Length: 300
Length: 188
Image (cartoon, rainbow over all chains, first blue to last red; front, side, top):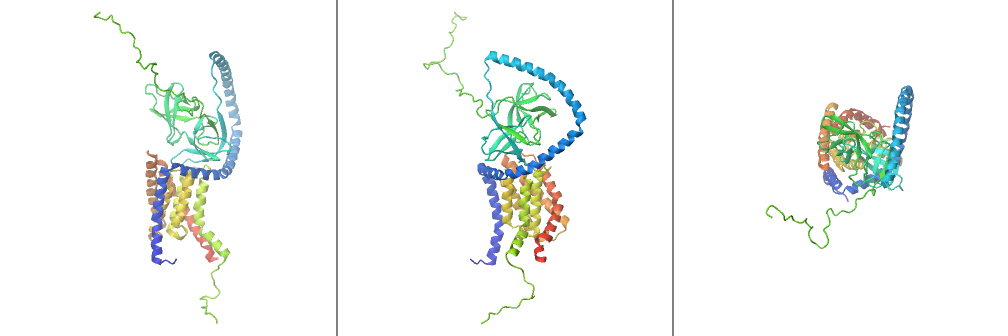
């Protein structure tokens, strides 16, 4: 259909405002239907995961080689340090062995119910999806592995984060440093419960700690069994004061270079029984029997 | 009966046509689009570059700005829209914000191009800086509004500074690409 030049020009001028309106629509859609956008992104990430793996491989090799070279340079100093450390570790090994023995004996006497071992899968981190607003990594997974939303990701040293989105070949792990991450923790020496709140910086803050029991510099921070999918006692890091009155957690896990992660499934580890939350009333519908009124009062 | 055909104005010089020429021309004119497309793709890969996250919007915005000012035919609004969706899919931020920023930069460049294409390079640089400040401020406001809490604004400042700093490099790249890649087909 032939259209006049004027009409075509007018149409051309309308394209950009229309597209800007569509962009606003996309923003609203992303807010209203989070699932759709997430699905789209995870599908794309799934498609690109092998390519990202290819990019990550030479980097890892390079880091390995450079690490090796550095090791060779520091060999002498390292050896001296390791010997000293070995002596100290040998001592701690004896202590640990004695304590393990004692613990086993005590548990045997107590009819201790052993914890069931959690299942886990390991995966390679193919991409750091941290942006201006989020701290997260993308994990490549075998399509057969059953990783669920809410899985707990650890590296060799401590807690890294939680699985928030699961695709067919990849899963997104929200790091503990993300600003939307809030985890209940226990401070090991002061035995205080607190919340570790990420704020997109490298050191998550400690908030809601008891004011009469403040965190001690350097004490270990472990998870606390308050939420079902996260068991108590996983190592998180240690307390550090940036300035007086501002305690933060220095994560034990190396969150700058996460390359291997284990994702644990604690989903049905400890489920509290259904509790009505009150004392059942005695049968018969009567009120609780009160203790007999002492008649021998002042007037009696 | 013979139909009349006018004699060629300059005999011997014909615009080349045919499949090869059209493919060549098509590839050359889609260079800006492909550049932004692959920059987005590569910078979303785990390269562990310092400031990689902030570099992506910086390069995208400067490229879109330059092509929209000087050669809007090769950076039409629809292409910017497609690139915006692509950047949004790869960036895991709040959906649509990058798209909106790119369209706004494109719109500003397009509406001011008759002035901007003639001004001194340094003034163009300054204008781009101002546009970037405005767009990044909008991004920060939108991010705060969508996340329902105040997002730290230092990374956004860093993004603006990075975009401002990388503009001359991208300008050089743009001039080179325009002269030797896009236009070469008509000269050779």
